[in-house]
Length: 100
Image (cartoon, rainbow, N blue to C red; front, side, top):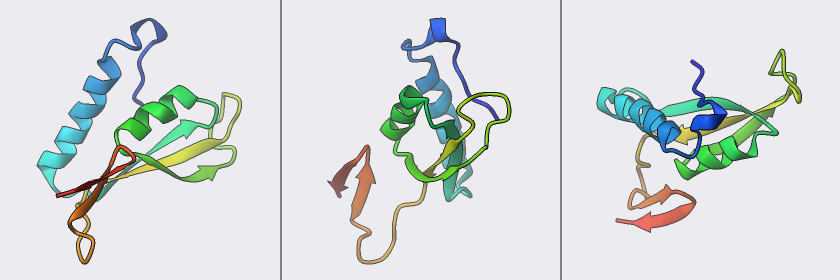
């Protein structure tokens, strides 16, 4: 799946609505543990956007993109499950730690 918003329509909340829609579907389904996505390493605005939703860079793939430069892409992950065990009362959200 490719998710994108054309330049004239950015900063209008459209990308947020699209991503929230996908996240809501995953939450309602209940079978997803994580969501992964790829972002071109030079696309800092997209990286910042996804980080606001709790995605974290977990690796970089060299030569991932075929027709654009730079060809390298970051792999971002968002954990959809609440941690269990000793730290179950601590949940990381938007780069802040929230205590229940």
